[in-house]
Image (tube, rainbow, N blue to C red):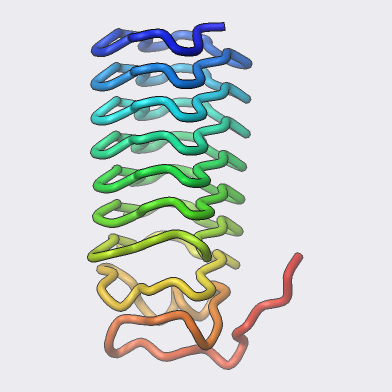
Length: 185
């Protein structure tokens, strides 16, 4: 139980912190690259500019974290909860975010280039400005009601396999598929 601790700039590279309570911890600019964080709790933690690249963090709880400019590049984040998180300018390039939840998360400026977003739920996230989806895999990704009008890297093939609705706003040149809305699982 490390909740509430100040680990600003700490080095947890390759550490095994699975099932660890890191709630309300300050990990600003900390290095957690290649750490194992399975089912760890980071609720309310400050993760600004932290390096979570290549972590293994299945089912981790990152609700209400402030992770502006953090890197989750190539991270394994299946079923992770980012609900209420401030993820402005976060890097999720090549991350596996299948079935991750982003309810009420702020995604402005974030990059999901080459990320696996299959069955992830972005539908209640907030995007003010750009968000990048270059070559992201979006099979059944929930984007209902999401304003993607300024998103970059989106193409029609990604939209065709995602789940949106009439409230989903798409970039110019992309059209709403006839398969929308998708049934709930």
